[in-house]
Length: 160
Image 1 (tube, rainbow, N blue to C red):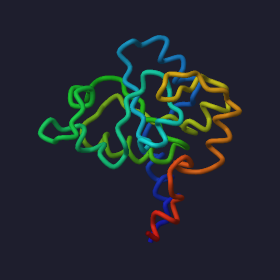
Image 2 (image 1 turned 90 degrees about the vertical axis):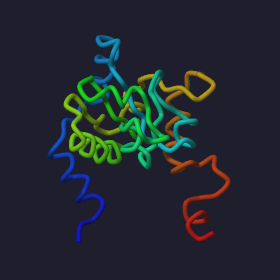
Image 3 (image 1 turned 120 degrees about the horizontal axis):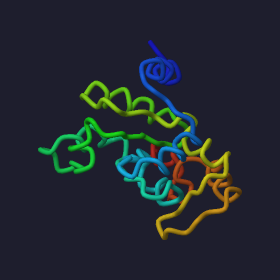
């Protein structure tokens, strides 16, 4: 049996990961770059990178195939385009990157350290109202846990 951490470590060894400052450089240099944020919707609403496309991890694979209701045109047509997957810490994006490589994506990578690292370097994050967020405020959101603004905590939701 493997732990989540072991699974993520193994995935990280088979994919390309890039640091947040490298992602910021690629955003400036490549207008065709596709940023896929695989947070849950409640996380994305709190903070995300400008112009990132929200595709939650739970529907990532079906978003790549045109025959599914969750299909996303950028992913359906993106198997050879430069794509960067983003999540909170880099774990979900590592797993998602590994899966999309298996599905034939050839120019895909994961942002190492996720939005935690992005925020540590004080790179810009926005909420759904397109408001630029203060890095200290984002740090508070990050430290409160998954979907902290949700009505329930994770434990409450699981036990409901």
